[in-house]
Length: 165
Ligand SMILES: [Zn+2]
Ligand SMILES: [Zn+2]
Image 1 (cartoon, protein in one colour):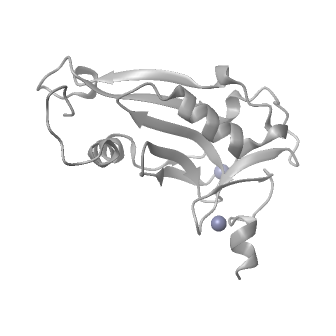
Image 2 (cartoon, rainbow, N blue to C red; image 1 turned 180 degrees about the horizontal axis):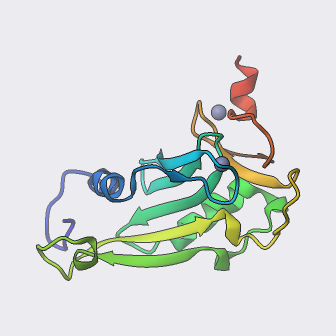
């Protein structure tokens, strides 16, 4: 993998994407929103690789930013701007982890860092309330942009895409 001195023609996110999809893809129950299935969606692959766990209704339960460097600040600016000033986002809401070849079950170069991941879970937000009109982060089913709407909403497209219809 992208080792110091190694020459790589592929971008970091192109290398990481198949690994991440293979290990963390797959369906799961939506967390903290509805009883629909949720799956891993690639949100961005230019620059940092960004994925999110998004349910069938578009609710984002988790966002992950992967790379070989620390990417907590990339996550902070991404989620901070997605939630907007009302979102009450704090840097401490972002957790980070380093995944090594050994803990990914890769036998070669077991001590190599495969990637660093920063993650943010929507249920970390301090504005915890069960009100169905509370705002939540969603991902547009058309353009993949993050947008904010009440968690009870059944709309799955952002306002820009809904105007195009
Ligand atoms: Zn859901
Ligand atoms: Zn959209």
